[in-house]
Figure 1 (cartoon, rainbow, N blue to C red):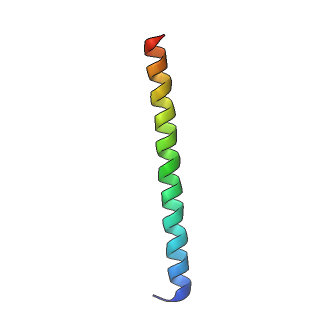
Figure 2: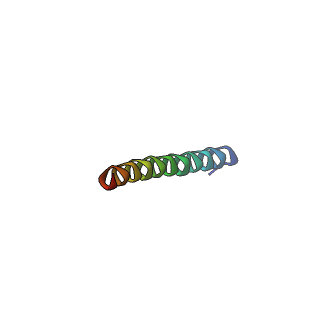
Figure 3: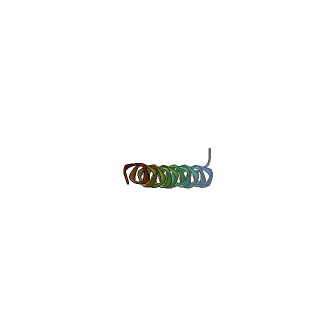
Amino acid sequence: MSRKEEKRFNDFDAFILVYIQKTIDVKLILFVQKFDQNLG
């Protein structure tokens, strides 16, 4: 794997991590909102 390919791979890896993090955040927010509605 050349240097350029390696960098692109790392960028893609970082993108996936950010995407997963955002997805988890959204699911967490939705879960909390549902939980709040059930209590109220």
